[in-house]
Length: 187
Image (cartoon, rainbow, N blue to C red; front, side, top):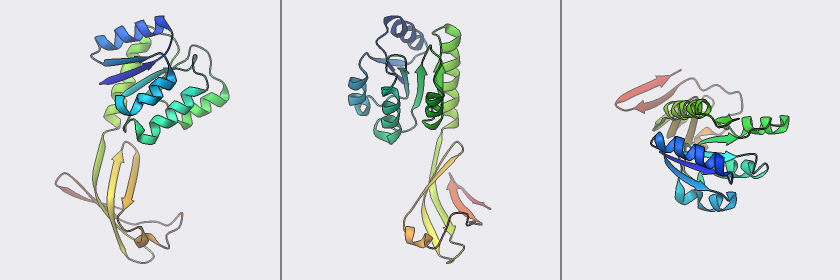
């Protein structure tokens, strides 16, 4: 598993690098955020650990860039911030779905981060399948692909026109999809 550490703090880099290498992570270290941003697509990290103290405005931009899928899918993002976040930054942490914040670099805090990383990847296992629904208004069948990841579901339909006349709040009574050899229909 690859972890990208972005910081210019020698102590932080040294402690996190040693810790994660001992946990069998491949560590990649960047001292310049823009250089990391430029190379995210090639790096394809599984985890990004960024110092919000050093990059108080840019960590948000980097996170949005990563979440766009350019660096791969299913990337856990953690902030290192020894200061208290502002209410606005706390809201942004939630909106950007940051996986955790490290307040101080200790063995306990890094162990806790490892547990969060493990849970993230267990929870975020993705199931991709074919899907079929019946439009309750037109009775047209819509086929497509479904991606189930944790509590999230994303469906891309082959012919979105089969979904015409659907509005927010309409109820789709049944959805059918496959997981392995099992055909599943849910109400």
